[in-house]
Length: 428
Ligand code: HEC
Ligand code: HEC
Ligand code: HEC
Ligand code: HEC
Ligand code: HEC
Ligand code: HEC
Image (tube, rainbow, N blue to C red; front, top):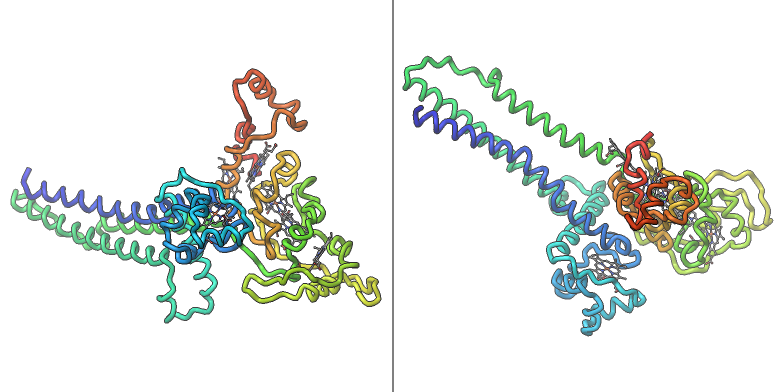
């Protein structure tokens, strides 16, 4: 075998390698590695108290790395042991702690600085994307470049690299063909005339493969995002604040969402339930309320809107017409092919509303706290210990686990052990 054809084969390998690299490695790496890790760490460790964009039990984290003294380095110390930073007399830390009513953030010594970087990158990504989405309608083509988020910059970069690699691959293919022909001629073998590129099987195969993968990539992305809308926060017909009702005035969630305990749906209360209290409460004198955009809200005027919907005349103190239904915008929306029951989780599972819905009692405007993805449901089913032994619901079923618990073979039962990861439990 001649040196030339050996060289030709090496070139062929190069072609295959560079194509594989640009098609698989780049998009996959970008989509899954960093963002996914940071998101996971954030949700496991921080999400119960922090939202990237809004104050919750702790402050909103977006942009904090530019505000704290010493940037990320300060945050490493803080996350590893915030009590130590406060005790050291750090002015910023002491102020913060006082502002947040001495709520102690737990220490996370197990997180490496790389882990914390991943978390902060995730927070930054969420924040940048939200900002970009908020400014998108206003931004003109000319301004777009300035505020573009790193995510889309990366996409552009990967796109360019992919294109360059593809061109290199095509050139190498040409070289390979010529080398083959030269080698054959040298050994006296007839070479057929080169096929034009549009009939060349290799080209056709490569182009089809590229189209197939690109289409597949966008399709799966679109499918994974069906109906996903974490942080969705629509404007409602009445500015009704959960912080005022469930927080400051301590009204029980079930007073308004009675369905959560006894049916599949938690239900939004009718205006009759509102009127139980608001026949008497016709003005608002609590703390000043603001829309998420920062505009002040007149609570008393909002209560007047309720009267309009209820058909109530506050002067005559009686109902004067049948009223109009309040068209609350639904925030949480599972796709129709998923079965979810509140009763099973709230009454049987004894899971707090806040585990799934976040700190609702601190929200003036409700937003979707969990992503409601399949992974979210299944992860919890894998890790959550079911209240099993002394739960009437289970007293006559899964006898095997009752015995194993008694014999000490297992010390707890998770929802996954009861079949909570089987497809048909959640999909009809
Ligand atoms: C149990 C609730 C809780 C958890 C969990 C929690 N934090 Fe906090 N965090 C707080 C509170 C409350 C504050 C405000 C300061 C204080 O009171 O100690 C805070 C403050 C911070 C600050 C400083 C913010 C500022 O305004 O400068 C950062 C950064 C931070 N947390 C990051 C994290 C990260 C990262 C995680 C996850 C690894 C995390 N926190 C988990 C409650 C929590
Ligand atoms: C006084 C009545 C009242 C109380 C008390 C109340 N809510 Fe609500 N809740 C409403 C109304 C009205 C809406 C619809 C308007 C909105 O989304 O803000 C709503 C909406 C919601 C939503 C979003 C529903 C959707 O559209 O997907 C959730 C989740 C929720 N409430 C949870 C809670 C939790 C948890 C508590 C207790 C901490 C609670 N609520 C207490 C009246 C109440
Ligand atoms: C159990 C009693 C109770 C129920 C039920 C109730 N409210 Fe209220 N509402 C209050 C109290 C207490 C205040 C605060 C008054 C104050 O601080 O001056 C308030 C304040 C308000 C305000 C002004 C503050 C804000 O949140 O914007 C509005 C608007 C309002 N309620 C709407 C509603 C609506 C709509 C419903 C039904 C979904 C409802 N309320 C159900 C007790 C109730
Ligand atoms: C295990 C997680 C989980 C728990 C716990 C939970 N919810 Fe939900 N909630 C959901 C999901 C998922 C949806 C979306 C359901 C849908 O679209 O069919 C939802 C929807 C809602 C809605 C919108 C109306 C409806 O019924 O679809 C309200 C209101 C609500 N939840 C209130 C509550 C209250 C109040 C509690 C506590 C008593 C609670 N939830 C506990 C997961 C949970
Ligand atoms: C916070 C943890 C948590 C989350 C999140 C969660 N679940 Fe569950 N789920 C449980 C627990 C715990 C049980 C068992 C309750 C019991 O029966 O004691 C359960 C039970 C169920 C069951 C009954 C299974 C059976 O044994 O028959 C279904 C169906 C279900 N969940 C669906 C869902 C769906 C769909 C989602 C996501 C939209 C979801 N769950 C999210 C904790 C969770
Ligand atoms: C604990 C509940 C639960 C179980 C168990 C479960 N799913 Fe899902 N599945 C969901 C939820 C919730 C969604 C909606 C996700 C979304 O909207 O992003 C979903 C979505 C899907 C989708 C649509 C694609 C997507 O990601 O949106 C497919 C396909 C699917 N599930 C297949 C399965 C198969 C196959 C199994 C069994 C191996 C299974 N599911 C088990 C809750 C579950």
